[in-house]
Length: 553
Image (cartoon, rainbow, N blue to C red; front, side):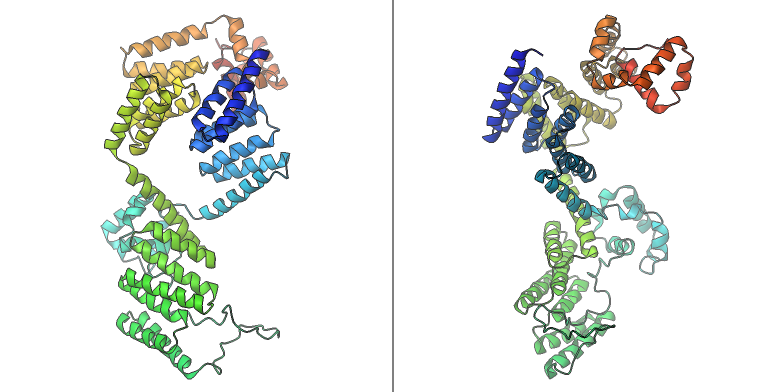
């Protein structure tokens, strides 16, 4: 690279930094991209552009630049911070955690890396239990033997529903109103989703309140029974009414249960448990609004009387369960988080993580609108034809969000990426296009064009061949195929020079073991067959073939 180019790249980097600091993110990306074209081995440029892409919310590009930063400068801790942040934004927390740990090996005191690692660990902990419970081993046997679901297994419609959920967990959000599905989740998850963990007798009054008197320091080998001698007659009677309410609740005699709980509350209005038990009855009756109202009162009373954290957590969790039954997932998430803030339990954490996943999927599905997708696609086409590729890219991306199953949209966005020289992202879109519609010829020709631009003519030839199979008269495919042939028959010295610019090829060619293998292949071609049995060696030989350094006859 010429010294002048390096100087220009530095100037462009400075301009990019100014734009980034002033909030002109698109301009910053433009400056950094121009600088990279002049100085493609400058790791700082990729790092800065990664930060800019992250601010734009384009985390895939931010990750790509983070990868390039680490690849060029593997001993620079900042690169791992960029890569880890992009992975975290993409919810790839395990990979992000590993990346941050790699960076901390280089710079153990780096606060950004420490903070990133801590956030990843929190999110990983939160994600535990996100697997599809209906896809676990032995689901049918478990449902067939559990008393709550065994009779349901005789119903073909129920069995059909479970089988559908096994294949497609995304259906779960639409099935939550089916009490059979909620009962099944209770069985599979080991938590009682139907009655907000109050299916049996209600909890006894807590003696571990925040304002309780210090207990004796004498060591106890067993839990100390609740002292009743100092309890007032009214409170004793209230406890009796509560126990009667519990018995009525277990018999599903809800009207009497409510009456007993009301009597208990009249005698002792400071006991939060009486209120939460009463709320559980309304939950069972399906009166979720009343359940929420009573639980809110329970929290208010609990705050006034400094009730135990666990009691308040249960009240918040019951509100969350009620909102879940009302299909108000945002409110359910809010109250499950409030419950966890008071007291962290695995049951509530499992419910929260499942609901957050369902809410996210519900939001994604609600956003789908083929008509609006078409509008964005048409806007994108206009911008593309006028040469405004960044705006076209934005429109196509929005169109994909509105209709993610339209293969042609990915093809259109791939064309934008080609114009912007973002070949790896364009290639990914081509793969998605082909996955959605394996018969769409344009997907293969566009893929071939990107692979040619990436100097991989042998792979491009495969893509063009597939396009010709689908449409033998396709001129673009035939022309592309001919370009591949010409690219592979370039001047050998030029081929070698171009190939040796590839870091992966450089690594292969400087490996003493590989050089020995290549010499053996020249002296004894039959030795190749034996070497190809090793997958790692076979992959390296294929890479050398792809770049035109060697040819097999």
